Length: 215
Image (cartoon, rainbow, N blue to C red; front, top):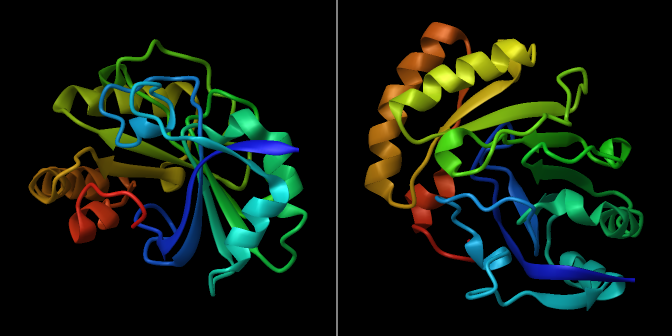
């Protein structure tokens, strides 16, 4: 069995509930969406992609080479390769894992991960609206919304209400690939989170390292 792979690296989680947690990142290739502001277009855009095909054993060996037993599975859209992810996780006893997803594909691997970071894409991403397949009744799911402009906030409110997402499961994150962009938008979002009872999450990796790969 082989998997479409972008990169594997060791860093800290820069977003969400596990912010700051040392993690091995398994970034997979391929995506079913095409967000205009995507910071990892190299995983799906054929003009700039450097994806490679790897065996499950090659991936597991690389993951085990790092002194860390927490795995963040990201992309691209990793839910496109769930059977292969399952095969990898079964070879990593003692590891914990979380997975990033846009929420457009149903999860078959919930029992194998401790957290599902669902990031529904808004109209500002350039994608058409789609049905949410990762439901709030899934106890492992949290919902991370990327905020680019003021109009996004009204759309998020409507989305949360129509999908019955509890405020304590909601994380607002500033869009941006530069430190200044993230910082400016963060200040506005913190006030919204205080008012609505949402969580705020920065993009710590952008603020520390900039828009670079493998960090």
